[in-house]
Image (cartoon, rainbow, N blue to C red):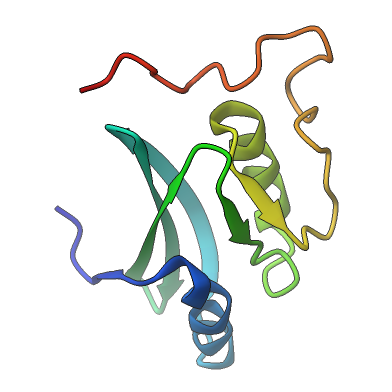
Length: 117
């Protein structure tokens, strides 16, 4: 269980991250976990050694607004998750379109477990 975890609607992620930026938070990392047919995407932020976590839910091939225009470092993890999980980040500052880590011949969405209950 994460302390300071806030679950929000995925269409609110960009606005909420913008508020964190204005308040001095820095982007630390993002993590993703498949739970059945849904993915929990959690962004992790820090301010003065205090962590805050924003979690959204999306489905394979769903769309999520990128936070990379607010925190440019996020473009790498967002591209990675496009490759591995298949959901799309809109408005990425640099978009590898599913080919950051995967070659054009590679199996698409290799981390999606289609057998989960």
